[in-house]
Amino acid sequence: MAKIGWGKVLAGVAAAAAAGAAYVYIKQRGAKTPLHETMESDGPFEIRRYPSLLMLETVQQGSRDRALGNGFGLLADYMFGDGREGGELPIVMPVFGEPLMGDAWKIRFVLPAGTDPVTLTPPGHGIQIADRPARDVAVISVPGRPTDKLFAQREAELRSWMATRSLVPAGPVEHAYYNSPLKPGTTHPNAVLIPVVREPEV
Image (tube, rainbow, N blue to C red; front, side, top):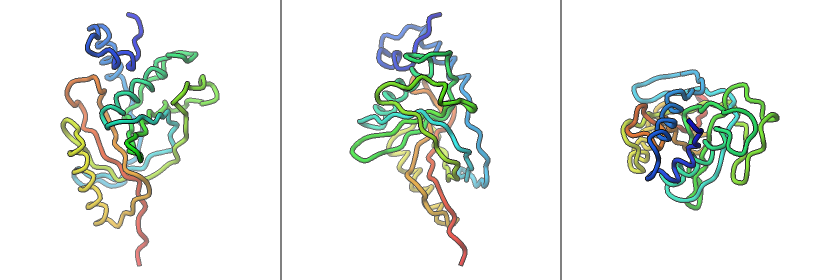
């Protein structure tokens, strides 16, 4: 079966062949998840410690859904070898989305552990490779079909919980997506993440 990038499938999803959809779903099932250490767990809330991660990222304009779909397709095409030398890079979930000023979103893919950026073909216009330092994040799961209203509600709940733990935000809120934009249903709950530091005890 010929290789079809997710961006190409997204662009023509209305006319996508069954073989193309099957290819996407197979890639979704084989997706890896970045390792993290769970420092604290309290119902739907967690504090996670992520190691430093090498990220592939792009900034997209528009609504959350539109930016996620466009960014997902653009980055996935690079991962699958479109315009890049070498074999396919395995998808690492989740995909991260960070809201920016001016109706824009930064969409990030995690590159597989052990990837040497020196060996990668420089990405094309609108994509860059960046290091993300190790960090602690407060997390709340977002079950069900994600909507702007649901993400805002869960973010408010997370910030309230953080206050009870004397956790201070150390960066902007992010969304973590564990499901392909093309895959029906939500196999895994998505999440809201906020980088944190703990207030010193007086």
